[in-house]
Amino acid sequence: MSKNSEKNIQMENIVSLAKRRGFIYPGSDVYGGLSGTWDYGPLGVTLKRNIMQLWWKMFVDDREDMYGVDAAILMNQKVWQASGHVDTFVDPLCEDTVNHRRFRTDHILKDNGIDADGLTMEQMDALIEEKGIKSPDGNPLSKSRTFNMMFETHVGASTDATSVSYLRPETAQGIFTNYKNVVDNFYPDLPFGLAQQGKAFRNEISPRDFIFRSREFEQMEIEYFVNPENWEEAFDALLADTHKFLEALGLPSEKIHELEVAEADRAHYSKRTIDIEYDFPIGKEELLGIAYRTDFDLMNIQNNAGKSMEYTIKGTNTKFVPHVIEPSFGVERAVMAVLAAAYTEDEVNGEKRIVMKFPEHLAPVKYCVSPLLKNKPELVEKAREVYQILKKKHGNVLWDDNGNIGKRYRRQDEIGTPYCVVVDFDSLDNNDVTIRDRDTTEQKRVAIAEL
Ligand code: ATP
Image: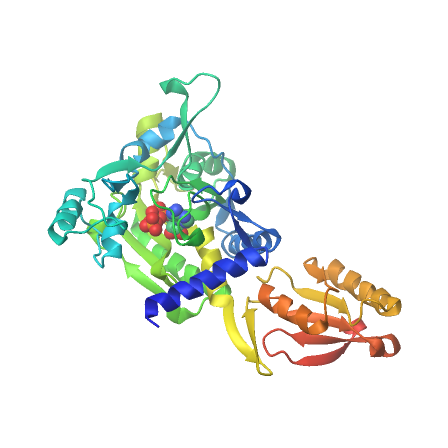
């Protein structure tokens, strides 16, 4: 089997498990779906929240130099004009000249083994012509044009140019527009950061690879404001903190790669960008990015809104517009990396099993409690007692009395429950239970009082 088809099979297995076990469903599935949208089921929403809460704890709660914000998704259209998104947030689009399916030109090149990073649209078109590259359906491709990825909408009852707004394509601008509010309210020492988690929307030309490239997704972003003299120090420190977070997600370090983005490939405002790439089942792809955005965004606001974005060093007359380091994480890509890292196929007593080896602090269900037999009321009663004790303590505890115990274990392995607790007849006499470990499948007796 080729490496590529092996990877596809692994991806298909993860997508299928995600649906079968209630992690992630295709959006609007009952109506035939809506491309590029995904819904989180009961286990997926907990997994996603555990990842987001861990990020918030590590980057906000545990630090003295970070402040949280939660800005509106809809913003004044001037935000997106000033930031450059109205004019330049575009991807190159080409079309199958026969069936009119549309594709991202750089993706067509990539699928044909050509890296299009840093190429202009004209250069991409020239390569397509020179190499005779056809659409995936085997038809000639049109010349490329630019396509703006922002979803446009109207605010209020009128639909003229003044009411135009956009679903935000990144959370960052909601942070920049609140920078001055936080400075005035809290007067933080430099360097300090503002952090935000929330939805972002991009009308991707070809959403693909499960949740990796969606049209609606979530971001976790930090704008870290620094004295321009110290930007390198702050960049390195945030990069190191990012690696600590990825370690806490349980991602193997050998699958994490730093890509120093060349000047030609960087966004126009960035003086340095490092993309963190991960070996996903679909290949090595961007998981997140860290960019030195200079004073680009605050100067834009200062110039366009006519309000000073200067920061005054306490007790001095020294004033300047701070520079910014931006670590930008995609939640869906983090979820996909965690799912892929956890997905394991092994054998227990000669029987194949699928087990999701989530780190314990991310597992959507921490304990599953069962009575050995569900038709023995005394076992059920005792097991309910144990369930209540654990539920009070941990919250994410599941009751499962369906099928035989072997089937329950298989089911819990597939959702990555670290511990299965079983109440049997000995429990009634000894006040203890069996705890089975997900990874080793070893079982031991533990007193209920010690749970
Ligand atoms: P790509 O090159 O893969 O399109 P990007 O460089 O445009 O990504 P950024 O604008 O830097 O992405 O966004 C920051 C992060 O947001 C990305 O690293 C990624 O984790 C996430 N992200 C961006 N676009 C999407 C998307 N369509 N679906 C899911 N996550 C996304």
